[in-house]
Length: 633
Image (cartoon, rainbow, N blue to C red; front, side, top):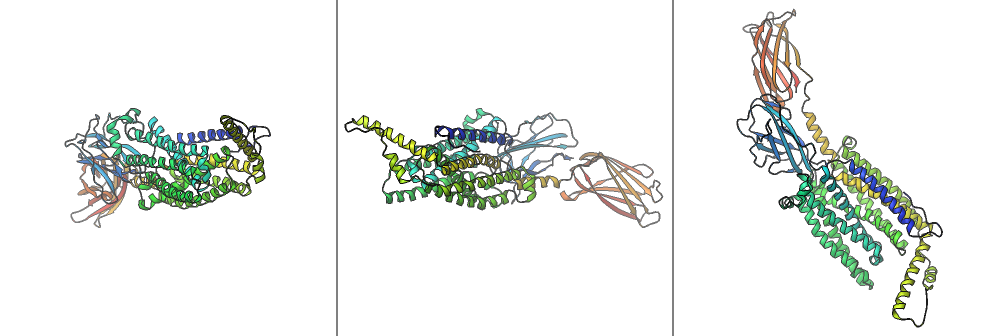
């Protein structure tokens, strides 16, 4: 995205802002497309197991239902509901019990006694440790599956209009933080004279106002975002109190308190500091502001680090300070970039020394971003398959590509920076020596008016000279392109922070894959046997129909070595699910005809890889037990 240099005779001010407006419009469009495809926020925590399992058919009613998650969650009354086929509560309604043990996160609810047969629905909703809402539902059956009238919401928690507005507020908060911290750091560290320049003051103050407003919106919408999804609940005082008792709510309140301290910092920076003339005093004040501002900025960054992805998962104690460094480096680089853009377009006085100093700050920020970004990527992705096969990994690749493009454009900016020169002293003197009007006897009001006219004319001439400088014009175009890419990068980063990390997604898929897939149809087995006695050889054929959890029909045929039906004195069958330590469940089939046995109502309580044991006795002393594994869904 480029901006052309002003034509001779054209206004030196209007065309750059036309280019800036075009860049902002295109970037807003890109951000809208990215946000539109984001959908509801995926969470860090994921359901990895349950007892009973999804789709299981149990012979008797369980006393409780338990759910296992990949990460810590926050639950409350009604977080886990069990509904019978008529949509009535089958659980006692008590708050879920924390059954966690070590690294295993598990919660359970007690069920009423004497529950009738049928299909039951388990609906759950909770808050992941990284602040995102999660929800889901599954069914299990007692005795046999049945029809159910349970109707669950089709929209995911955290979605809908409330989720969209909350997501926009998250982006705006990151943008405000970047402008506030990056702008203040640019003034204090790169261009101290900018503290008295009105456009720079407006930039930093707008960053503060933006972050404060976005934080208030997120605090009010937190209750409907994680619950009902209705805007009206934003003013529910009980819901707001519940939000304040959570880690994300406490983080938002802490951010507002720190923004109060940031307001004091801004007042000193653009007040006392801007007016200070003594070099020694200004140096001391610079040190004090740098320390105080750095502490406040780190505190604000920590409100994200302590309540989102960095606060949960592996190595959280290391990840949180790393995340704070990452956010501060982003603000120093991108916020300083926007500050430089404003200075180049709106102020004629920024010199090459300030631009070169920011170039060094940006280089240092990129080094910090590279180090912290590599660690964060490893922590949240973990494997190459997660990098390429998950939404988080794909967004991360997009972010890396955008950073690479941004660095390429920044390389051109550094070239323009190296060529940048300041106005010659003679030019400045010539500009200053061109008064609008001189008079020996003028009244004070007229003198003040003449002074203002002189200042405007001098500034206009200086800006015209600087705009005609090809080096400065080239730098402005490259910085404008950097800023446009940076806004898109910030949008992708915002979506990334609300997307389930690749490592967790892969682990959740692995847990689901560990459960055997249901069989496509009836189970058919054929097992040869040899009892060792006379006429002791043959084949056992078994059919299990329909071959899924619940009630099944079992048929057994015994054929002799000649292939003809063979009667045996005794035949027994047993089923064992070794992975869950279930069984052996004995089955005693009835003889229907020569070489044919059958059993009805054989219960398969859970899907899995079952071992089928068959005991065949061909005489008083000759018998053998054979077995075979089969997946039954």
